[in-house]
Length: 225
Image (tube, rainbow, N blue to C red; front, side):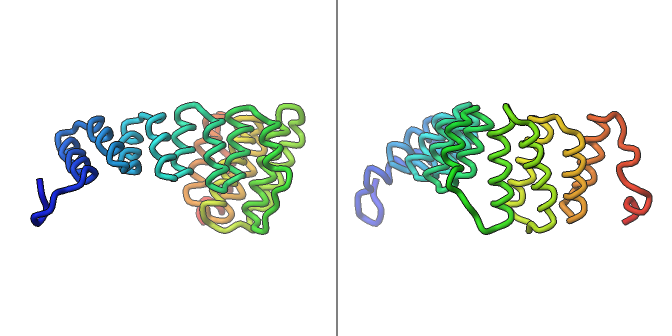
């Protein structure tokens, strides 16, 4: 096979073969060709789509897409490897949370968190929640205070990925770890106050499922707002 009179390279031939395999819905063969052509990113996406998490993580690492690799390691129930990738991706907060929450490696998480400091409100709150997650098994009150501080600081946050992380971690800590309906309700209230999308709907659904009733969640004036 040639291109304008020139022979195609091995990598180009493999890439062409991969595209043919994809057209025939033979994605595993396509992945094999992409990997042989050192096109690890394309192979990783196909592996991920097929939920071949280990292979996807390996290919994302080869392509130096460290966060994507970490997410695939988590899907593959390998939080230690996920934390390693988050550290390479320069995201120590995610690495520490992953060790604490998913691997129950609290000492490892504390080492990562020990010297961290941030200027943004969102990351300061996330740092507190990660430390609270480490404290939860032995000191539930300290973990609860971390959630409360996140709720109190929430009005100062701005929409974006970092705020979403605060919401997710605070909810996980309050609901899944501590089983504190009071904190969950307060968090939903803070979210609703700053206009987080669908916060009220999710709040009502949670109240119905957890408390058996959503009555009184909002006043008549709030419902009309």
